[in-house]
Image (cartoon, rainbow, N blue to C red):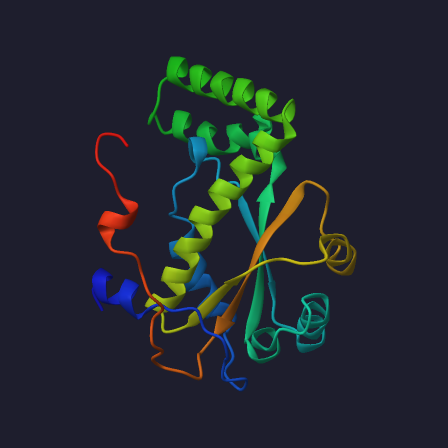
Length: 210
């Protein structure tokens, strides 16, 4: 389908066909598109923990106040912001190969690495700003994931992540990864659902000032 049809056909699934399963190949195809999402300095701040094991998924069900969509979903994807993404060593992994392939010269490379270090240091000194940057990038990445999933015939639902401390302990999530949200994925029981009211463009868009 074209992009317009893709966007219009995506909806938040409230119930999934429990027998439907995603394979590792399904996930690989979805994430191969997801990784093309933009991110600050192309640092790719977003990580994912994919839960397909039924017992582990049921644990998330319990931690998430028994929301039924988790019970029937093929998988639950925990979206994580990576606080280590601004470390120079991480930036070098991304920009080093570009320098080696002469996609950027030494001067541009050094300037970019220094800019990343300065920005990273400023975020570390201001935790709320760091969290905002992680959330901003994760939101963009997660939207790309949901559209990519729909492209391959799967439905999703973005969800709030609850009981973060217990979730960390249950799945051994390290401190440098911040749970931002969850996404349930599978095939929706309802192939079409009435879409809730959407504001007209004039209600939420202004040009050149308010």
